[in-house]
Length: 175
Image (tube, rainbow, N blue to C red; front, side, top):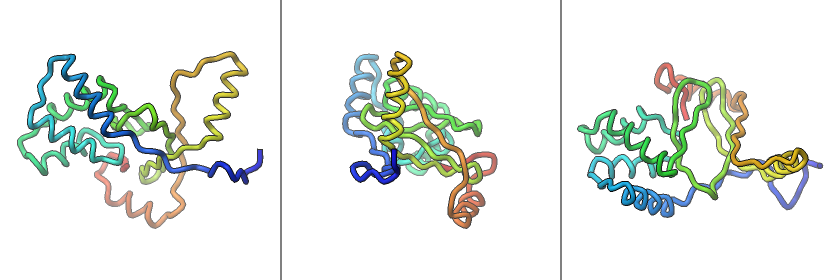
């Protein structure tokens, strides 16, 4: 295959999840489980839904405490676990020891480019990769149920990378 396909751009920016659909999914899940929507839970959910990045519990805690300083780590942790249980959030790990969370969504599949140096995470979609995966699965009579594709390397803009690296909390990669 040639790299000059005109019908499909290379490395399209990832489509975002349908936030409204995910909120409805969460509401149904909470109703089914008999869970109530507390003010603290609402703040955590709202801040999580506002996130366009791969957020750690600590990062989300910092964001929610800007709204309500009384929200604790355990409350954020339990709420993120609830979101994952409801299939509203995915837990992701990129090999740096941190568990991150991102909004889920059937129609929002994407892959990741991860900078080994500063921790930058770029989401992308590439139809050619998806097509190739399907062809490989068919060749081996295999049904793919899920996959994750992560490419690790270095940012092209080394100056911006150094800036991100110097401004992230110690011991954690940025996102």
